[in-house]
Image 1 (cartoon, rainbow over the protein chains, first blue to last red):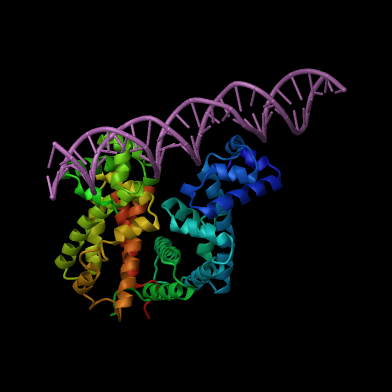
Image 2: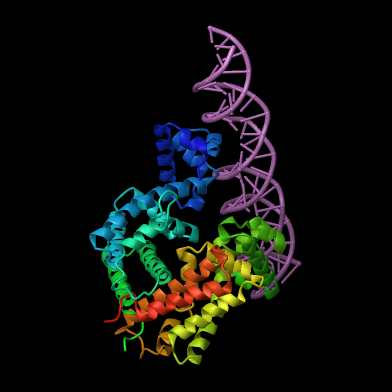
Length: 205
Length: 205
DNA sequence: ATCATAAGTGACATCGTGTCATTTGTCAAT
DNA sequence: ATTGACAAATGACACGATGTCACTTATGAT
């Protein structure tokens, strides 16, 4: 978490700093990013950076979680739109991420995040579904989901189903960048895997 | 890939170097590891290290792939033992990794690898199933698998099924370290998820 | 014994990090 | 308006890590 001093900053300075960091994290993955570049670009003193943030990761995860909130909002809208169909909602999110990214400047940011997606980064993204501090979205999402056609008997199973779905979706996103697949290729893979997930890996008897 | 000079080294010196690197990668994840520590521990000159390897990552992935080969051998034995049942085989591998690790000195090495598992590290591990240079194991494994009870109609679907299974297994391994779960807890989660995968996420009609 | 080639060495230039003593800015109380 | 107390800003600095390179040493064929 950024320090209080960061939040005390005037909006414009905060934005400049965030922009500068975003630029650096778009250039290289977080572990290669240089604070020197960020402060140079934001035109603040090196020491000031440490007034606002603990370290590189601190500002990185702050930005990442901002982004996650945007995605979360979209996801909940999709879930309502498709009457609680979790597959349709997650697929729409996937398509949005696949199609939206490559053009944008933010595309590079996501690319670096995905290609070096560690557990910590993945859980940051997973906040799309779970609670961010203020509101408990996990519960809210859980309510929105239509369980009628799902093969679950309790909340625990629902939780694990979500885990499986997000994991598989993330891996498909990562592969899009790692193997430099086209949108069509990665959507094809994703579709096959979703079908397998829905129907089950074992033959129906 | 390590340079030729590394392979020209006498076995004992090579082992010393690998040991030293392993020690460092057990101390901290690869991105925090220090070449200075490795050469100090192996009692070679800094310049020598660069005669053998391109950089830190070079030796890290070399060691990782060595480890992967051990696991691969075990996996193929399991697959034969269970008459080609892919679920039983992968579950045995999972249990081996869960139960074997925490005690060993290598445990820390795996912990650092799992907790900072990027796409590159995951594909290194995935060589358990795909071809390493010499032999084409993917094909061999593909032949060993009993497809009778699997819900697949072609090789492409088999490939994606393997992808799903390994992804889910890896995430369970990672969570074991990230959330510091007990063996029992992580096995319980894994079991639920495998059941969901087998039976399908949608209700059977 | 000679020489060419391979391997080994460590000092060095460069860059990045996080700290800290010091300066500058802000604002309430007098 | 002046003071004083607290918050914020600064950049020089100590430290440590990386990759290179000119030089030394070893090896093995002729």
